[in-house]
Length: 74
Image (tube, rainbow, N blue to C red):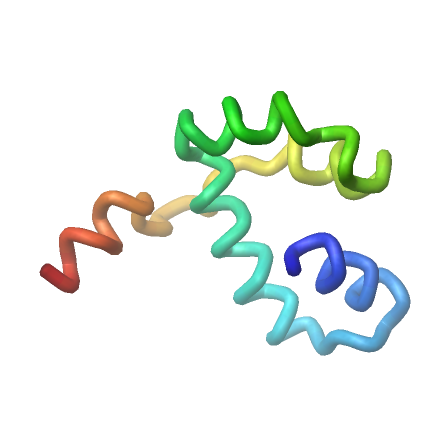
């Protein structure tokens, strides 16, 4: 899903506001240690450009962590 949105954004088919939501969520999920373990086993399933993009992602300043999001609904 994220890779598809990334390609659509690069081609100009996804509006910036839509991409911002995907990107923020991707950055939040990428910051989780289990995601990095999952990624290490599956990186080759994705395009090289998208893989590089993901691996350079940093959490957005002030954005909640995944645990904070989950805790806020319980």
